[in-house]
Length: 221
Image (cartoon, rainbow, N blue to C red):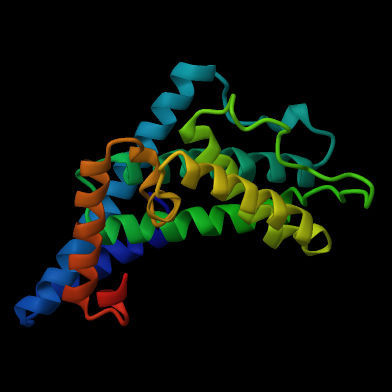
């Protein structure tokens, strides 16, 4: 448990001792459970990392400067936190608050990793294009490529038109196959593909939670 998490846990526990409305107490309990899930998932991620790689954390003796070692150590921790966040998202037991926290954590990890490892400059003559033939790609991989093309269009504004062209080709191919790509590429549903019933149940659960929390535009989502 990090220092910030420990302080937040103590804060939530102290607030729960106060006389509060049931709505506020429910929100605090949900946040506390989300925090516990994060801690459990991080430990599970550490166990998985040990089993898969048997690689210890970076050692100072392996680097020539303190700065290189500190960067490698932070990247190692980011990998563990990313695995933990994905475990929470993949678990059917994770609460709505837990999913929100995991989603925020993944965004923070991506931002911090990009700061530590800036993306290499892509020469103007190099383009990442849609594969020549889409027929040989299965539906799930095609959905992943659709999301990748959409992300690259944002990351590389100079090549945006190229990626948008590839994006349109992929979306057209998905539509020709009868795949509702807008449904599968929204929220955290893609990891359930092609189990439509499970995905629809999750979508309804997220919508219901947003309505309960009074989120704007929840009826249109």
